Image (cartoon, rainbow, N blue to C red; front, side):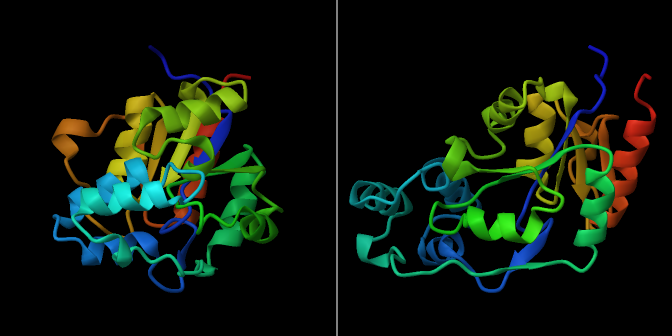
Length: 221
């Protein structure tokens, strides 16, 4: 099926727009769990990042799956402020000049902080879709589908930008969206199996802005 004209940019937050000033709940639980860190992270994406509230039942379920006592759950942890990368304001300004931008992130309900994100990004970002709000976490294709539906689009009209290969790039591809990988100088992984012509590579968000503008210039008039 031919690619459709881009109509919306979805953007990861942590690692793409900035970095939290200290490790969060996910990092604490992964470090404490005896599971392989990759397995622990995937479990937390599915069970913790998609929850709209942290209940005792959820804590028990998550800790049991991680093979931890419930006392290990960091209940008193507060959100760590997000520190934007230096190139982000200018890059967002350039992207939002050609397409609307929303965020699509995997995050717990404790750490989502939509009001803080709005205050930081409202000049360029139209809405925020944390996993704890929509009930799905990347790379689940339904996360992308929810955003597309809310905007009256299909996923083929989305350009997703992110730095996590599995969540952002494979997730976007499997949902039918275009993807721009923020490589930060890393080698392209799994290229022979997964990369298609609609995946672009950018060293940082400034370079990703150039890709978005190029895609828009190719749109039928």
